[in-house]
Amino acid sequence: MTRILLSGCCGKMGRNVVSVVNARKDCEIVAGIDIIDDSTLGFPVFQNYSEVNVVADVIIDFSNPALLSDMLEYAVKTNTAVVLATTGLSDEQIKAVEEASNTIAVFFSYNMSLGVSLLCELSKTAAKILGTDFDVEIVEAHHNQKIDAPSGTAIMLGNAVKEMMPDAYFEYDRHSKREKRHTNEIGIHSVRGGTIVGEHEVIFAGNDEIVKLSHSARSKAVFAQGAVNAAAFLNGKEKGIYNMSNLVNS
View (cartoon, rainbow, N blue to C red):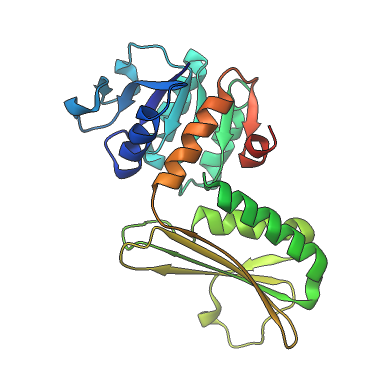
């Protein structure tokens, strides 16, 4: 049985995680962290980590980047593994995550969807085969409440392509330039509107032909399911950083 401490339990993603866990028999939520206390969730909710008085095996974090430091401090102090699903982390915060992984097990992915993990692998294969003969453009779309842009998933897809194109670089802002596209660019573009859950498309544009790879999330449940699967996978693992590739191949 995997005992979960759910950070951001009263948010939209947190409630999706609760629903997923309630439908399983191999894990349980022993407590939550949130500024809102919802007594209907069926477990105690604490406003900060200093108040937590229960033992958990894994923290699932669907909260806010501002809470990362406190969460990592608690996790390291209590030797609790972490599934980090919060997006919009700075480079400095990512370094802090890497440092924490020297002590505890950390599952870190910009996207918890199995389908997106597959999209990364397919994009990597396409980049290896098509090479610099094809221009690569990544387009992502999310709801109008999403704060960070581009999405972490778009960056993850871009990094997958860059593994096969080491000289490539990301181009985010072409409107400020008046020049033709460079061969080594990977264009990344963001769309924000309505209630779009998450759309990602990787375009390989060559001479007289175009290859498109895409993923469409129809509900937040796919991310919640992935996070809970990651928590069950991470329970009992040695220190270090794990990702969706480790989960898929386990």
